[in-house]
Length: 177
Image (cartoon, rainbow, N blue to C red):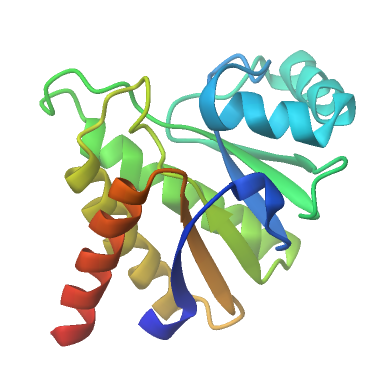
């Protein structure tokens, strides 16, 4: 299953997959970083769908995920998930980050999607330690791939080379064991 995981250094908005994951905020109304880039590149249809979701359920809680179309992105869908803000690691942040991946995979399964690109959830302005976030992400992705044979490709797309290096080293260590 680890052969289905690919680490890419680049722009998540430029990769053609069934779904890209957006590191969203609870309002679903766009923001900075990955969230802003996805909304800018995808166009207003994504924000319109997010507003309908907000009207229906009041946003998205930390650890949960919702799905929209991808507008003008090369992906077919955007899965919006809200990662935890890092406080000190003693307020459930690791479990909440793990839940983001579970929630995203549940939507992939529910919608019959087979390829996905994840950003580095919570490591930007939410300040989750990058090494810890990468370990949680790869461990959970590997476990979820073992449960779902329909998923054929999972990209972890890192905008910064430093993050890509962290993920590559961890994935290589996982392959060694």
